[in-house]
Amino acid sequence: MIRPDLIALSYGGSNMRRVIAVAIAGASLAGCSSFSWDMFKSAPASIAVQLESDPPGADARTSLGQGCKTPCSVSVPAPDTGFSVTYTLDKFQSQTVQVQVVHNPGDAANPATTVTEPNPVFAELQAAAPSPKAGKPVRPKPKKPKPATAAPAEVAFPDPNAAAPAPAAPSR
Image 1 (cartoon, rainbow, N blue to C red):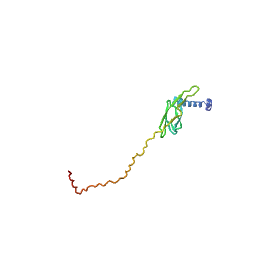
Image 2 (tube, rainbow, N blue to C red):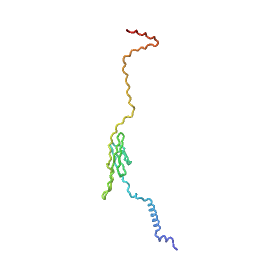
Image 3 (cartoon, rainbow, N blue to C red):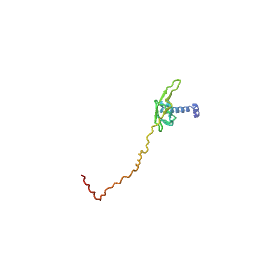
Image 4 (cartoon, rainbow, N blue to C red):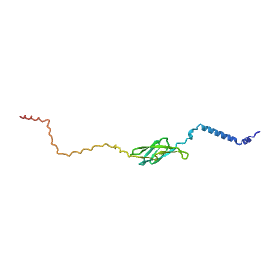
């Protein structure tokens, strides 16, 4: 008769190896269903862009969506083309500055780099023209009365009940 405890010893733990091999095979097959070549692509590089303005304190917003109050720095994903930064501040005209993205391919000695020009991105804001006040309308000043002069003589009106005056004699 064969003893079961000897059978387990004779395999030398190969049952455990089989279980591990089956688990690895199952996990690798499950991973194939979600496999994508995109996993080998690097994430888009982000670029730190310094934003400055004169006067400081302007709201700066990139066309990519990031924004801050100057002076500040934002991190933008490196686009293939350029982008713009728009500066706004109360009582100043808004200004938009175009930013170019320059991709420098690397070589054996230097890694690839991506930079923006200009960096820092600077805007000198111009004061806005004063707007007309939307207050009350201007009313003309009232005219002062003229100084009183001698009172005019009283005009006598004829009494309507009185007899009509006699006609004047014709002159010859």
